[in-house]
Image (cartoon, rainbow, N blue to C red; front, side):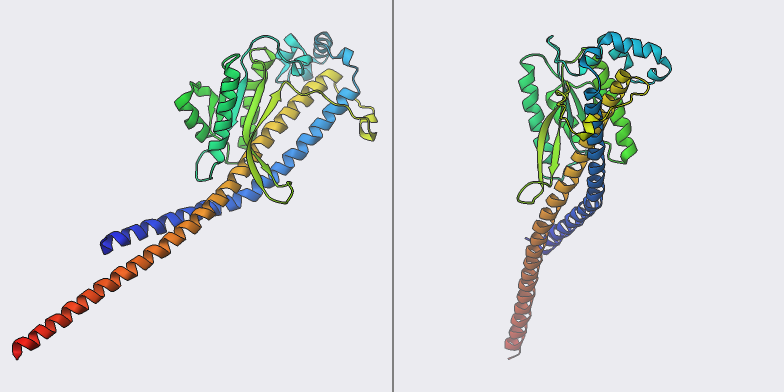
Length: 331
């Protein structure tokens, strides 16, 4: 192999090392930010869930009916008109959130991935898990699919026909972008068809982030969670739940709002958990790539030195041989 080719390969290795360093640095900066936001929305979600439990512990189950909800909406029309889920609730009632649909309606699967690679198995694993769930649910009714992230969109564009309005870029710019997308998907893609009984259940697939395991180590793995229907509200008697609750403007309208806030907090926590997992996975992957490329650079530099030394030795031999030949000719 010629010297110029070796130098070109070395330059390529160095350029790739610079590239991995940039990605690693970017992930290192973003990781603690998304990790902090994740903790915040998990806390918000826990509070929303507790308030929802508290509401149900203070409302007799027999009054949670469509008829009573319609009465409250009529009385407090000025306030309830602002509820984004009002129309579906008018027709089917609050119990829709908790009762599985007996009709053979399709499920909705939301797949959350990254917009780029260079993060190990992060995107591949979540796409594979989604593929398994799609195959499983297809035996009953072909599920609807929403992809959030360029990598899941690219993957399923080859094997599944997904409407263009069900494909989204992962909102990685800032928190407001995540809020806007969460609200849009929750309103148009989840609650509207679910409350109209057009879909029977909603699953979200994303990469979870766990740093609470024993022994202490961070684990990232794809998970499948059922967003709707909501699980049974287990009311545990405690000082917190024993307190009487005042509902403004009314009990069922408050529950409607609390359910939506709870679902919103879940969507936001999924986004931040996926982003945290992606940044951590990219940090690890780029660190491993950087170590490997530095080793390749060392080997290539050693090869260049050996080749240069061989060339120098060859040139010296040629010079000495030429000098000896001149001496012999003069004699």
